[in-house]
Image (cartoon, rainbow, N blue to C red; front, top):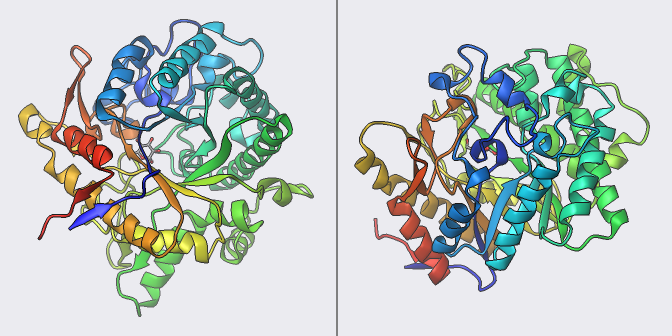
Amino acid sequence: MFCQFPENFIWGVATAAAQIEGVAFEDGRGASIWDVFSRLPGKIKNGGIPDICCDSYHNIERDVALLRELGVKAYRLSFSWSRILPDGIGKVNTAGIDYYRRLLTALKESGIQVNATIYHWDLPYALQVKGGFGNREIIRWYLNYASILFDNFRDLVDYWVTFNEPIATYVGHAKGFFAPGLTDEKYARQCIHHLLLCHGEAVKLYRSMQLPGQIGVVVDVWKHYPARPDNADDIASAMMNNEIEGFGMFLNPLFLGGYSKELTAYMERTGLTPKTEPGDMDTICQKLDFYGLNFYNGLYDNADEQHAAAEGGNFQDRPEQHLEAVYDVLHMLVDKYGIDIPIYITENGVAQDDGPDREALLKDEERIAYVSETLRHVRRAMDDGIDVRGYYLWSLMDNFEWSAGYAARFGLYYTDYNNLRMIPKKSASWYHDVIANNGFRISAN
Ligand code: BGC
């Protein structure tokens, strides 16, 4: 059977600045919270630091050649705030502007659409020192940064994303295993409230500038289900993970105009309610042009089993795959959150553990199986009428996987960190064919 996608379906791949660019301290760039956090002992697997990564800063042509080789229609990337504004505010680093202009121009000349994220986890360290997202001033800082991007790249970006996965900011302030490495839940809740306001204000600014293109947000959904549907503890665990510490904390305010009743009750009970001002929720809940879903897995909670927070954040301690969950998640977006705008799968992919056997890593059958299985369920949801317009595979090449450092390889291309050469894995030619045929054959078993 052939799994066929509609003619205008947008096939792409995704990356993020802090994970591929490198050149952390040259050409005027300021430090980000990840540059600082990664240097704290024990925070990153095998002590990886993002100083060089894939050195994409010096390799625009190499990266664009890979994208052309794959035949992607779109590339999802992010801007590094501290490359544009080394101190987060104030003086603009023209070398940073120039770098992105060259990259975006090369993409345009190759006929590749650009989906660009304004903020993908890498706050300038200079702003963290001033309180970061915990300081309501962040709204002004973020708007200043966004307006510089809008002004400079208005002609080169097709899709703007205000934030990628705001959960990372929660984790970084409440759980400690992401930058900036704090463990203060009250502060984390305040940070999230301010982050959501940054989003809303940026959308308002974007509208007022009447820019071409579209603007949206990316929220990852790791939906938890009770492993035993009748077990009260499993139900409570899934609720906690979805509403209190998961996607509900963002989707509710972004699309329904307020914190959920579960989260509100929880924050009141625990004294964690953030400080708000009148009108905040109206600011946060802006009409968007599209929604980006990052989907990696569905999770089944058994309250009798302990699941430690995963290294890297992506629940890599739970090897079972429940990729069929994407079908339910897409329905939930429409049914529960009333999302009536086009949806893009802005990330989906699977990691391989690094190891000495490169040949084995290049034969990544498990990635092909994972992606095709996810896509099959996405297609089912589309058959039901859910408006999914595109799919971005995470990631173009192996890169700096946050707390997992260089130990988790997510790429279609294998990154040889000794010489920064990119070697196609089996999945690269498979994905090339998917794009060329606008679909793929589903294997019989
Ligand atoms: C993030 C990426 C990350 C990927 C794989 C997503 O949560 O947006 O930056 O590399 O998952 O873990």
